[in-house]
Length: 445
Image (cartoon, rainbow, N blue to C red):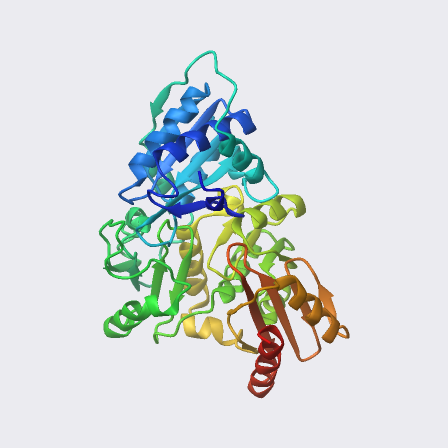
């Protein structure tokens, strides 16, 4: 088995050379051995290899003496939902998220969507799986099916939408991914929502485009359709439906950190004074908007499993990441993409504002977006940046973030590649261009 498939937040690799039925078997046994789980829930996405991965996992889990509960085709948020609705000790989602068709992988959690990732069990599961040696179980586990969970999840979701508002026209780009399962939620409200769909046939080969709204080039068809249909909002899911991106009624792509501020405003109405976590790469305008709405704000690291852990440790009611992950108490501090959409619609309906109007107040600063650089010695570059910019306010939560009165930057190392990732924000466009050149010259020298 290739140890490289074990990432900080999940497992991902090429099928079949890196991840296959045999690898899944040993990962299943390792999960049970490490966690002591007696029952494990398994859901899977639409990839052609997912059923084979499921088969290997089930064999490994049951050989190690634990029972399996199969929930079938699932979104990742639905899998997390099942983890606190079903009496089970752990749950596995078989998916490689937005990665191309030749990849597959797994996301793990314990009961109540408690994440398993870097620093919370992933290393131990990796080391056990690589040995391929396990204590023999006295009895083989059983297999059961719970295929009613899609309906339970959809009914739960419907309760959060406020009806009786003016009708909105929405364009959805599912990218042939698992978000298609959530169509039924929006179709429950024909008086309030008119839905138009792009790429709404499940296809793990992703024939139209990569299901990754973080890549702006994947949103071109959505932008064009929103404008052509004179729609109120464009919505793009990623492959396993735990991330979402938005396009305004004018076809403008909404920065994903802006959604942290918008969703927080609505959530704080029910939880006044609550703590919100924002990705440390987020715009300062996000923090300012949350504080204006009466919320408290802490920064969080990048990575879904790390954010969920911090939410529990600090008692946060909501968190958001720059990649379009949004984490809600309503799903045991895990992603619930369709809840994010419904919450945003509620905000639009209550304020009477278009999406363009809602984000206008957040456009106060100039953000670079994430810029990647190939770097051989990442630690040496970060040490150099700390020395050069030692007069700024240093935060080492994730890489380094250094703040000055008129600008800030964050540089963090990739978990999987020899790259450094730069994010930079300034008060003026001219300062942005100046500091971007200055920093990249240091990073890439």
